[in-house]
Amino acid sequence: MKKLFKNPWFKLATNLYAIIGLFFVFWMIFLDSNSLLIYFNLEQKLAELERQKSTLEESIALDKKTLNQLSDSIEMERYARERYLMKRKNEDVYLIEYVDSIKKEN
Image 1 (cartoon, rainbow, N blue to C red):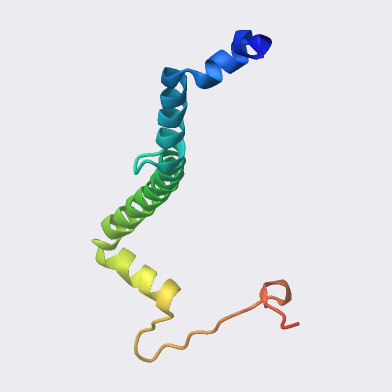
Image 2 (tube, rainbow, N blue to C red):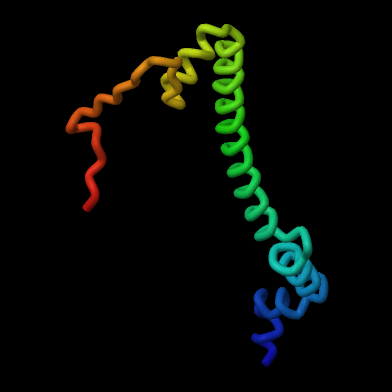
């Protein structure tokens, strides 16, 4: 029995400060409202939102460029003709589709 009391692991396991310290570490990692698991989850969400932000900023820059081009009436007419297939009066528009550009239904 004396050997058990002299064992360093037994002394550590029965030390009140060690037990309280281990409980505190366990609490902070798993149970606290600001736990390490929640922290990593929030970091992942933050990284995803930053990627989404950069994508949206690129989209905004492209839209601003398009708006600047559309301030000219000639460019606006070209955009409307290409994008929305608009035409002038007494004008016919023919769409030419190549075989490799037609989507096939499977």
